[in-house]
Image: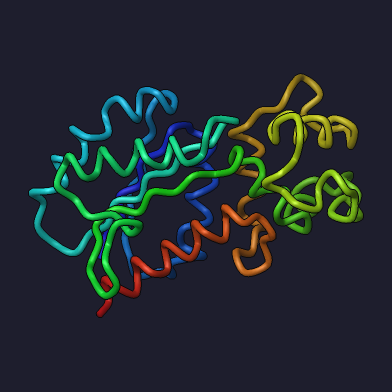
Amino acid sequence: MHFEFLLEEESAEAALRFLVPKILGPEPTFRIHVFQGKRKLLANLESRLRGYASRPGNWRVVVLVDEDREDCHAVKQELEVACLEAGLITKTEAEPGQGFQVLNRIAIEELEAWFFGDVHALCTAYPGVPATLANRAKFRVPDAIAGGTWEALEEVLQRAGYHRGGLAKITAARDIAPHMDPNRNTSESFRCFVQGLVAAREQGAS
């Protein structure tokens, strides 16, 4: 079985290089394609999906974008429409028991919320970060962190003495993701991402 990931930024690629094998196991193969931002991904999505529609074999496409403080439902609908126009069935639109080719997922509000969902991994990568971080009111619900999750991560890391020149998102992803355990993550959008991938893998194996 093969997975094609369509992403909006390189930091997501850096994280998924480590996370996908943890979620799917060693057998499925995968390839990652990074676009220069969400708008470019969305502008090219339908034509890209049409190319997959005629491809033979056991494959799934996974589209992952950040919410970026936009209307989550509107973003999801835009993704779903592109798939419909390309003639592909998404997990959301599939009837019970029906197969699907595309999994659309949104990191709420940004990828960095997934890192806050696993404070143990964050502290392992950056030992100066206090282990009590998850107990603070601001960080208890990773997907609801106010003021932007990448800004919050930058602030936390700088206070601990890291990334003093500004958050290097790709570096942070490469540092944190290897220590993440998908089973303990408290981010709801990350859990939704994991559940979707597992469903796609199980469907492909049946």
